[in-house]
Length: 353
Image (cartoon, rainbow, N blue to C red; front, side):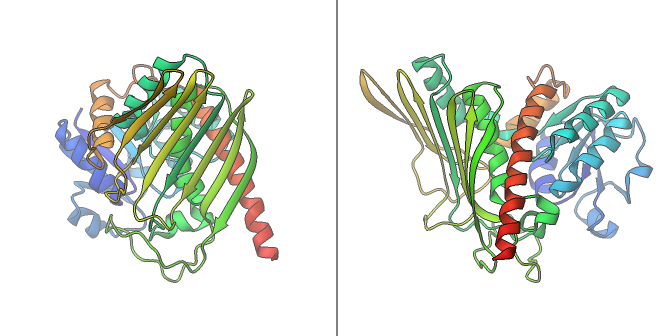
């Protein structure tokens, strides 16, 4: 296993996937990116360049990674799966529940797995947090609140800031990660979106630049949410997800609060690749025995993604061995479809003034 195809050759492919795959023995990389000239793809390290999927054949690659604008994920994944190429899709895997059926049928025809990229599963601070939650109670939390707040994190790229490409803004970009976290904490029980609040950011100048790979799309106004507050019901349990690309914070932060009948467990940390954390990571548990706060060791930005790739390769990209299922993707897609639907209604109301 040594050959990978990247559909989309942006910063995620070049700075996360390619180095991690090299570390575990991959030596040949193909690229398919209709927005980047072939000579630029080769200059950026692509050994083979494809104009489209028509030149990709079964057996050409051991795995394909889809890291393109959100709305193009499913068509590319279906084409790759039908060609018998195991496929990993970056978040959000899809925006609609019907998309899951399309990909499942394609995977069946190609007899290969579809995997979702889920680096949060490998975040060491989340793993520590889950241990504390399980130690306090085996029951699902009565209330769960998860927030990912960035200080100046409005992306440069129109792929994330235009609804025609992304579907929604921070509520999907950060929200998909947090949905994964919800299910890590509560178990795989469907979510029902009951209320939503979105904040727009047209004209906002606070654009993130730490990746240094996206072209600044100054002519493309932001028409998605830059912050969102989402409330779900989970079989009687309350789940709240808050996301923000921009805020008055000095740094970025992820906070998870789980309220259980036996007590309360809180995590303060940061996920992903941003180095801009303003907090010391810790887990705090409150119960009848009092409150205990444990400081967590420092984390290297992007390390969870590296661990994820190494695990995927070690397990042969087997969905079963990696604990992934179509039923899980259905729950993620169902929640995401609801977010996108609420977001569309909010955009329509904003347009009407």
